Every structure is written in C-alpha cells, then in structure tokens.
Image (cartoon, rainbow, N blue to C red; front, side, top):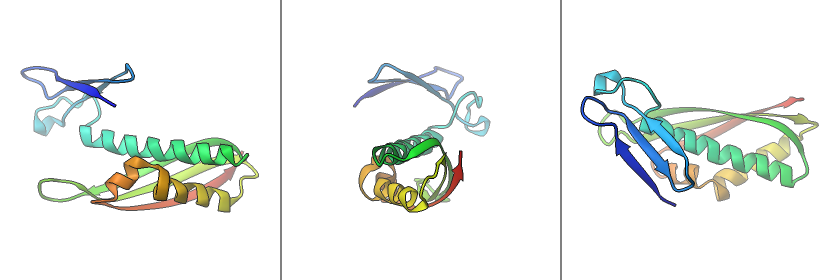
Length: 140
C-alpha cells in the first residue's frame, strides 16, 4: 500500500492525499490550528478507517455464514490523551446490524472475529486504546 499527501500551501492547513488505489481524500485542520474546517481532520480519518475496516469484516463474515444481512452502521466514539502525542486512549464501536432473522450470536461472533483476528485497524489501535464494542440487531 502507498499514498502521497500534499499540503494545500501557505495560509492553509489542508492536505490532499492520493491513495495507491487511485482515489483522493481531503483533510483539513480546525480553525484554531490554522485550518478552515473544510474536510475531516487526519485523526478523524483514522477512526473512519477503523470503523470501515471492522464493518467490512462483520458484513463479510455474516454473508459467508449465509445470513441475510441488509445493513450495517458503526457509530465510533473515541477519547484522546490530554498531552502530546494525543493518541486515542478509548475507542467504542457500536454496530447496528439490520437483516432478516439475524441470530444475535452470529453477529456477536462476527464482531469478535473482526476484533480478535481480521481488523488490522482496530487491532493496531488497541495497542494504545481500550477498544470496546456493542451491538444491536434490527429486523429488516
């Protein structure tokens, strides 16, 4: 994997990233840090990546188990250290899984498998943060 990040130039704290897969992502800083709040912060992008990584795993695991999953939303909340480096110290991921007759044990197992074996992002972040999960299953 690779990516290239380019600064937006003087008077800005925006950055444009080109990913190895050919996509562009914009990032910006908070106004108090010289940014203009035009895009997500870089640390928010880490949370987006972690949420996307685990959601991908959970959906794939449920589909491979032949479960009729029809929706997956992950709400991510995080806390950071007060001093530099302001690493994440706590991350909570709440899954909202929608489907037809989805057994709760299958959802619970898929989430556990993601966090114990497959989700590189949350496993990596768990080196500095306490990562917790919760879920709810809704009938479609």
